[in-house]
Image (cartoon, rainbow, N blue to C red; front, side):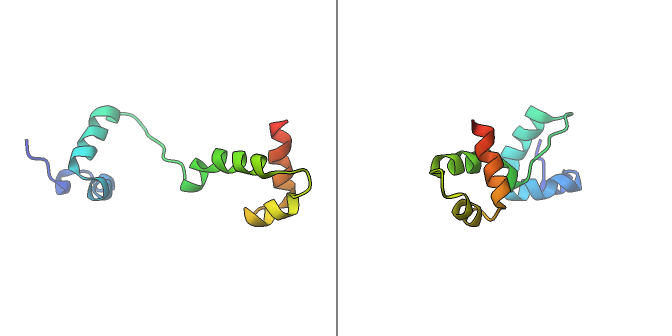
Length: 84
């Protein structure tokens, strides 16, 4: 059966235009009937960012890390504390 992008529900048309119909059909086959949540791009990098902050922490550079990662010093400290 020849499925076209215009046959899809409107919310899936943009997905099909970005990834192509073959991948879209695979997504329907794999996840059809379920709810799938896509976190923000910022959230998918959170663990990697936190790990990098912990690796770069030298005991004295909280202010520098906060500036580099555009976050408060208290948040950087919380990330470091969480690792201990």
